[in-house]
Image (tube, rainbow, N blue to C red; front, side, top):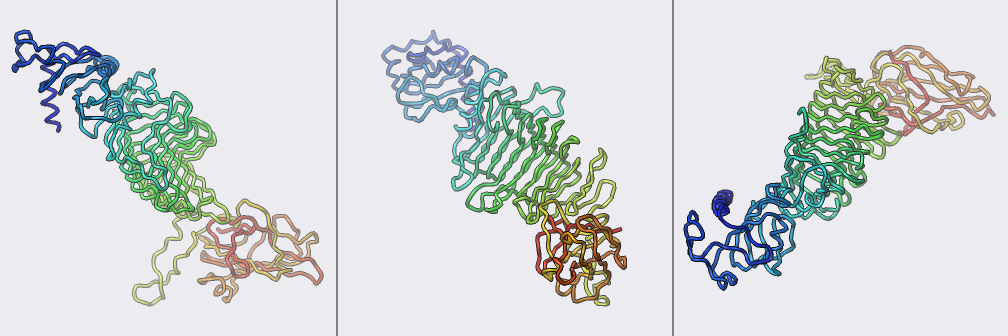
Length: 604
């Protein structure tokens, strides 16, 4: 096909050197009949008769027009006609091309490749590869002054069901409305077109100026500059800056997609979200999978903005997973209350040599389990820089482990404090890896060691809160003859702590703490020996009370059981609770519970 185009273009170029331009709204001027030598001047041949020119029977004609308006103004009388278009708005503006007349062709004028003129029947068809488009063919100027929304959208819409490449040459393209890629509903309707590629000439990253880049800039209020609407596959966005210009809420919105690639893209100056990734709706299976992002830079100084936001649809199991980011950067600049990245219903995402930078009043990465129990999970960060981290959890929703390998510390990054954010720094310092131990089994058996089994809980050290923020609720253990247990894995010596306890206005009663070695489950553990203990007797209620266990215990897996008793006729005493702290298990009368005790343990 390319060879055919080259041959035809060569012939037409030679012909166009001596042909006169076609006259709009009149029969096209064709080559004189009988002139078989394109190098011979036209006037040397016998001119065609007006009768033959009007009928066009058995004739092939060539002509030149300056603009797309001239092409549309033509009335064609030739049976076969080729037209050299010099430009869309004016010659040489990038809209030029070769068109062939097809009197059997119909269909709507798409603005750049299929053109209707004054004839009721027949269309001009651009000579081009079936799956190639250029926004200049459809009238885009890229001059930073003209609204190019319709031209860019027309180029995308002109593609067939199998998609193709829409080239966006160097320039600044203003858009007053969202550019739509795909028309699926992210539910039960697939997009009519797949494999759509938006190809610019570069994002300008690392260049001294953006003179050679492609920029798409919002010129009016809109939800997002570019929206990819699935179900859709094979989309690619590359080589451009997407500037929300503080007019668009979001930069790029991606919804229910797979096999997408984004390369050499800058997304800037958005109000809410820069790269906004969301899983699809019902039915299950509308998730985001097998996607790749390379050299994507996202930044905005807007307060409360999120550079990278990734979520799914937890209720329908449509998550975002099995995707890769390489050499990407997410920066909140001077924004307050912002986040470089926010992960929710996300699974098995890998980041290589990426940067998450936030100001002191913002957060590098937010891991958000609220409404997404056990997610996010399995995110790997390899040689990445993360300025800070935050974990959002409650009684019923907790994150799973995320992994950092070569966590950068060169620029004052804060090592994650949450026990499920585990890894090793670029200097070789491990964090929250204490529970990873080798060797299990019975001592003396082949292939076994005398080390204890690996705990199901992360190791804890320092002052460890058994509670988190939440509503205060009391449990009258004495009156209910109840017991509350806490399973914790101590990565150091358990020596004591402090507790906040109720005695219902009279400071009468005793709260007991008994510590057992954890052995498989609650019932088996409490059937063992009490290793250490402490009693709060007639204590001052509703204030923090320090305690030291009767015996400091070495590092290990333990169950602490709280019970209470009081005098006959007294109302009772017990414990206060809030939401559960991370990395522990709580039991009420032997059954797992979601609350946490208002108790802090000291593990040294």
